[in-house]
Amino acid sequence: MQTAAEAAAAAPYVGPRPAIITRKGWGADESIREKTFVYTNTIKAAFVHHSATGNNYTCAEAPPSCAASTATTC
Image (cartoon, rainbow, N blue to C red):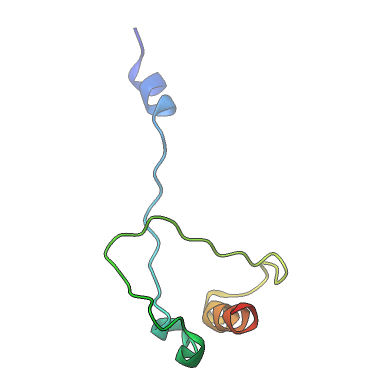
């Protein structure tokens, strides 16, 4: 029979849900936005790929970093 500790160790870990920052929240340039896009209440997947920028920025520097990467990839 499995102990409580073994059961806890085998259970999948679901981390805390991160805050979702909308485009307006990080200062997106809405003039380059896809015109037919709409937000829904369901998120199926999200990807942020920023390997070229590294990870050596502060939380305060994250919004302009997102805006800059969007401006160069859209």
